Image (cartoon, rainbow, N blue to C red; front, side, top):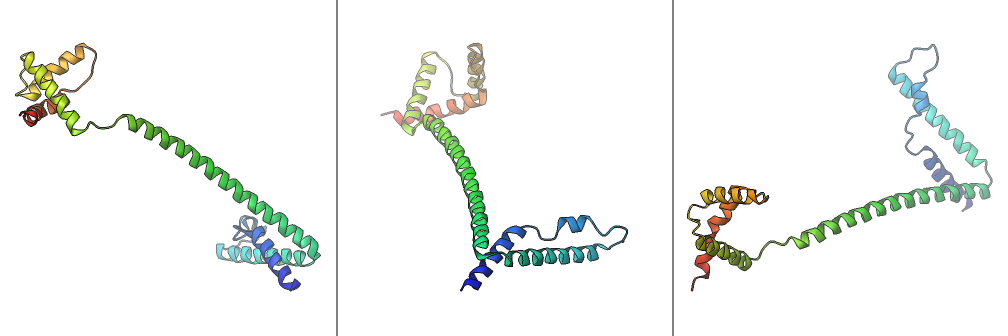
Length: 180
């Protein structure tokens, strides 16, 4: 049983040590001096170099007493867990920031609810009565929109004549819906 455990610990330590290495960068970037080497040959040499590095590290780990091998395993496993914990903390921080952003968006959106149909019609009726009392013709809403845009502009309020015309266009229908 102890040999199975040793083999498992050694495999874990080797995987951790060579994780993400693929081919040895040093061997790929430092070919033998003075010897022209093709890319394929250089890659094969790097593969052999990585295999040699792994074999060398395996022999060194196999030579360790079981207690030291366990200690190295525990140390490496602890580093791996700490890295996962750091990643989780970063993710939690990002999620908290996103949560705060969404809460701000939600609170702003909650104050800007669209008017209910009844409230909208009531306001359109009020506009219609005010226009009629001032002898303001809303039968041509977009022409009236141009006039109201200028009046609003003089008060420092910016509303486009097309928007005004769109609302004024709804006034007759709203007033008809409220007639008894």
